[in-house]
Amino acid sequence: MNIRINWQALGISASLICAIHCAITPLLLSSLPLFGINLVHNLWVELVLLGTAFVLGISTLWHGYRRHHHRLLTLGIFTLGIGLFVLHQFINFPYDTLLLILPGIAAILTAHYLNHRFCRQANHCHTSDCNH
Image 1 (cartoon, rainbow, N blue to C red):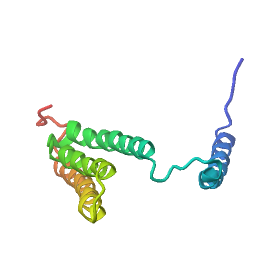
Image 2: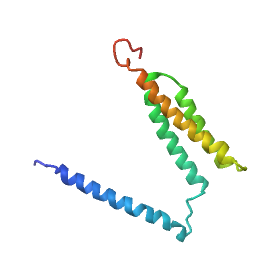
Image 3: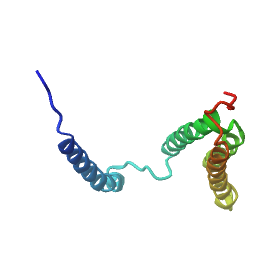
Image 4: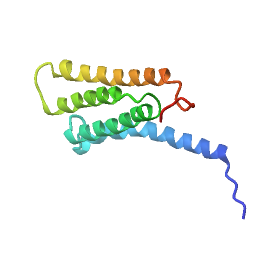
């Protein structure tokens, strides 16, 4: 039995499902407080989101570190940035956004910028003179 997949129909279906999902999700999330579920300023939701961002960011930076530039600086700066976000969840004082969130954003952006720059500079990788 020969099964043929209509890739165009599959792509159109996936796009339609995605469009419906993207249209309904904000509506559902914004109606959650009506049912007593508050996701804004919820410590556990914030920590799960920060954990997810940390895992995704580290995996992206790890690829550049491992395969191209071999510099731990980007991973350290990124971890510092996420650490400032986590600290913001537990410490509440005047100007905490100015002193924790803005430097955290700057650290995360700097880590990704440096990773990109280091990867571009390491264009020798995966040739005969690469040492890994």
